Length: 120
Image (tube, rainbow, N blue to C red; front, top):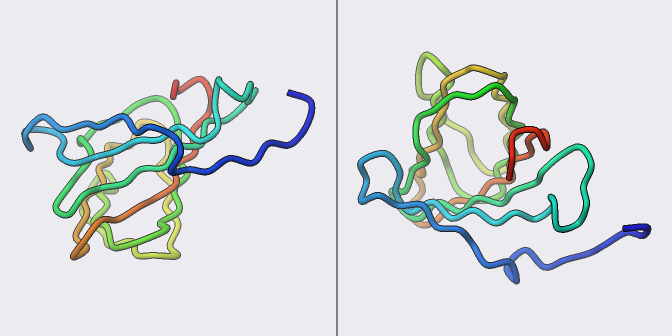
């Protein structure tokens, strides 16, 4: 792509993760910027967690750069759960176990940017 592109986040069909609450519940992922746009270095994803939803507790070799757009989250930081609210940012270093839980009285949303090597 040789020019700037503007898109509508809610026009992107989400991938929904939910295994009945065993490891993940009510997590919606939209890849905003990635392979489709030919992004060479980073992938930007928009996550929506339904009320009481959560991502799996996991670790991997790449960092996460997160900005909370809406709501209130409990974030596992490798040792304990900490609170992140609308307007906060979270840096998760490589190989640190992490998880995001929605503790808002409705849905919560956050942007998550990772290196392209982490997939989409």
